[in-house]
Length: 239
Figure 1 (cartoon, helix red, strand yellow):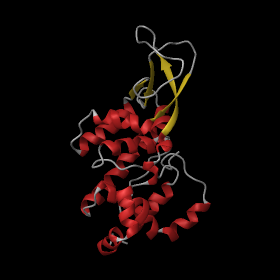
Figure 2 (cartoon, rainbow, N blue to C red; figure 1 turned 180 degrees about the vertical axis):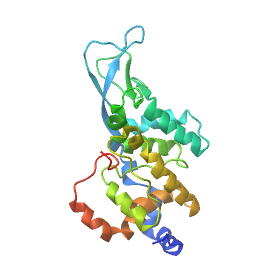
Figure 3 (cartoon, one colour; figure 1 turned 120 degrees about the vertical axis):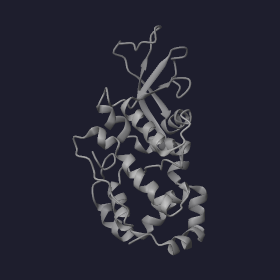
């Protein structure tokens, strides 16, 4: 069925709708959802990675680190926003201890963690971008809500597919299993159709979140019920 403006207006005027739009997603409000355990590298005095076979682990709020990094870009349009996502996926970025995370017993030592960079290390498309797509997109949304939406269908791609189909929103073709880069960048295709939908129906970024994670799920709950019995997809549902 097509998006019904009248039914939507009833929703956003209801207590449920007003509360969801005002307070936002519970996933976004829970900091613990974005704490990731990351393997890091120690640099020597020449700022080269030490090749001593030792692994340093650190916990960091990936969403917050992505938000701070993205804000330095001063993004003004969707093309630039897409370019940022692609650069993170392909070229990668670095986080530093003392700025983005802390490690006990390593005071005074420079520790870095590279994130993304699948162009040189293809496994990172899966291990970094796909497996932390929720934190990555939440951080980008925090910085630029007009150009990104937080993707919380990481283990529930079937649900997203049902929602898009029900509301007659185009479903981008899913890349093949061997297309690691294309699968990592698949978020951009989903984001494109949803931003078009948001602008067409004059929804704010918060209203798009309410549509996806509350209103739409309520409308298709009967269709989603059988999916609860199926094994969860990994990543975008693309692993």
